[in-house]
Image 1 (spheres, one colour):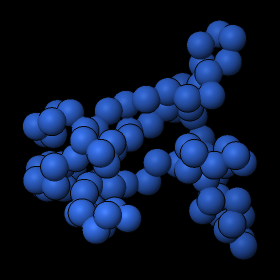
Image 2: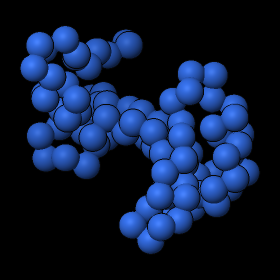
Image 3: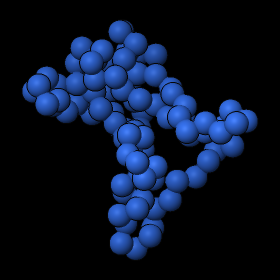
Image 4: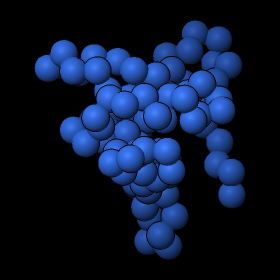
Length: 90
């Protein structure tokens, strides 16, 4: 709600035939203007500023590796002690 240009939105991906899938908050780096309002508004400290390939500072956060073929976040599959997992809040 703090984003003045609507660069942050909730999305669902990998939906099954019943319409269930994974969902999360995604930051559109192309739309982000780098104002930092989301960083200030996030009560969890989950949003921070980072440079893009074009060296423009934009908001970023964990996106659960939605663009990977594996479908599992890299932190979960790479954890040597298997201490991390993804859970559904449904």
